[in-house]
Length: 241
Image (cartoon, rainbow, N blue to C red; front, side, top):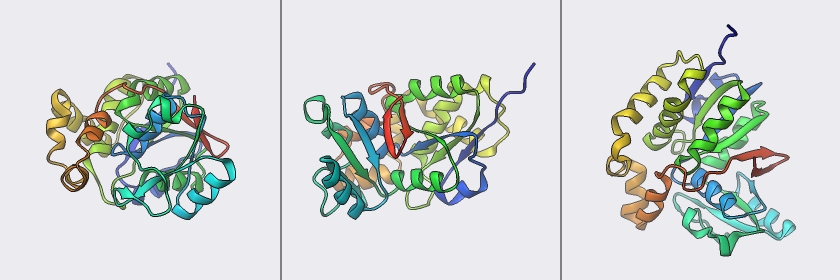
């Protein structure tokens, strides 16, 4: 029997350098809210998304391509951007056939780190596109790194929960000897019956809901398969895979 590929979970961008990303599928995970917003926009018909790591670049590129400059810093709309990082903003009637240029505090930065480290197979994942992510990982039959964006290099629970949900669905297909993956899986299985209730404990929930009132965003971000597309990174763009 052929050996199964390996799966590891990186709990923070600050830990990504410890993993070999070459010939590996890297899943960029930023549940609240970048990778949920990416799934929503592509699901609702965006042509493609250009993820960038600086607000100034987002503005510049959006002007070049005639796209929408969007994103946030510290959870709120960054100066110079026309739209935020809420998945609910990107409805079909707004985003269909448009180009989204997105920059966020954690998620887009992590994607660029993975590229800089030599990753050549990058997708983005969140609960809204859980099944598409899992199908892709099984089909590729390559080593996997579930890369959590965290919050400014700190650990966060919602990204780790999603890693656990992926592991729960694909674990038969991979060799997993990794304490962070074990923790992620346990965290998910213990709380999967009511993720929204559990999320009330999380620091990022408090940041987004108590300060900005984004409870509908949080609910969307924790709902499986409501925007079930595969965002695949190709030629500096995220496209539907």
